[in-house]
Length: 119
Image (cartoon, rainbow, N blue to C red; front, side, top):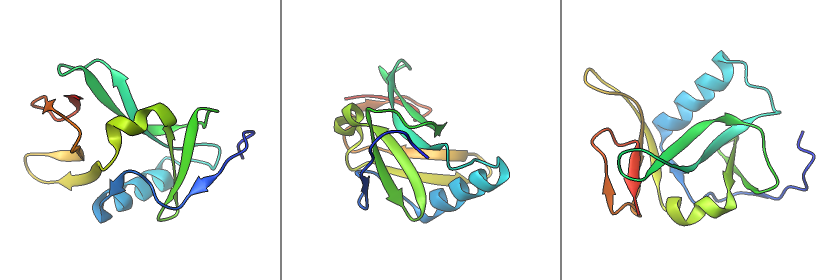
């Protein structure tokens, strides 16, 4: 349980595909992630295009907004919303590619691997 006063929003600024939700819920189960952690999505400086995506399980901070995405608690630093608004996160599992894919309409350019962008 968080020690911060939290408003949980029903509508997230980011969309997760059915495949991404399924894989994230599998990870929660397999890694035995407790309710002390939530899925963090955000950005950080770095990468070949200037900004890199953050996707992982983390503890909530005071600067986070909290979203309920199909029963999955998602946290995002309020300042990151301008970079991620309207983004879709997908999960692909094919012969040539396996992992989470970020489709960001705010990105001016992306790198070849798709994990960094400029806005």
